[in-house]
Length: 484
Image (cartoon, rainbow, N blue to C red; front, top):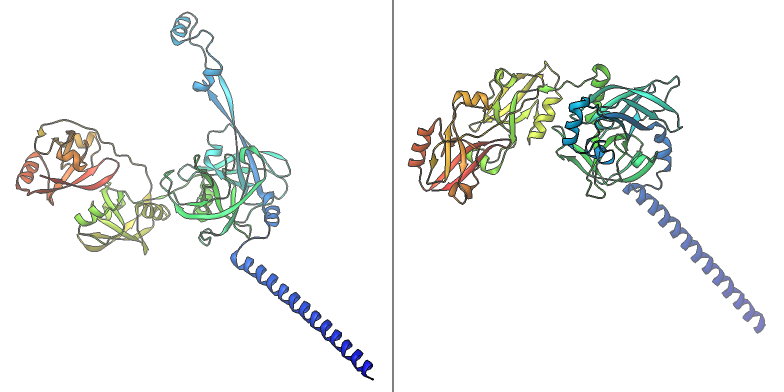
């Protein structure tokens, strides 16, 4: 009986141990499943993609390789280096041409590669202007390796965009245009193109920054990405994780790795529509020269907290002039949109339809004024400034000259007032303060300067500190402070 009880106890202990082990394994398995699901959920929430394969397979049929041929005459220095003139240097060439007449320059074919993407089943393709500009022949290669000759529908050098077209009897696969305004810094993106001629190359990265201005044109507003972009990627699409085009790969920094730039698709949409309809882009024109505000200018103009674009000059007879906008006005708002910089104003005005009326708010002498401006078609304007000479100012170390009406007209100076600085002595007070030859002095200590007499009188009345309100070529208005 004792033995039977002992055996029963051992069996019970074994069963309990088995149950305990089974329970432990079940619990461990349960937690493993929970952690796996949590990890997957975290990946989904954080936007970390499991694979780019499906996205690449979906969009790559709409991505094309673009090959261009351009005829170059003369060949330039590189051509002459490899193909020297048969009679040697220029002196020998002059001698031979005297007897045999001028010799025709050789021509050679320059070939280049780029990328693009189809935006409609009837064969419209978006790419960069620099990919097709000046090309004698444009050849488009699809993913299935079929090739087609393309024609240029329209180009816009200001934004480096071009629209080309191929003829195909079949409906073509095309990419869907997304919303670049919704993309956020840090989100994943994919670039597809033909870097170095390697077709259908897929690279991935994130959006590094938005609204980049890199000095390529007046409408810079680039997306920056670390997805690999190399020569040959130009014109290819930048995609979000849904496979929608949110940018057009355009530029790289040659000395930087992981720094590429794409044109936001929202900016490109209107341009593409205009190129398709008219073959060119028509932009709004206000008729002002503008610059960004600086802290010294804010203080001088009594606009310490102001944001906006400072009007340097108003083109006579243009929309701003007709509406009453003046030089030194600070444009702060257009059609309810705030203006923080010159870039903002340029971009917003450009997108306003020609002939429509814009409501513009500006600060003048610390007060807000509202203008109704009928927008016209944009024209390019250039302002050049050259120097002249006159008598020196020995105290400050500068030489000055009056601006005559003839000089103002000849050198496209904005106003027939002020004096021009023709020279600044090295190491002088003016030199130390940053005054430069070519600066036009408009005011001294808030007193307008029309001629040399005004200048001398203002300098004589000034105390220890002299504040010059000047206009500088290609810079705009600025303030220079000199200790007398």
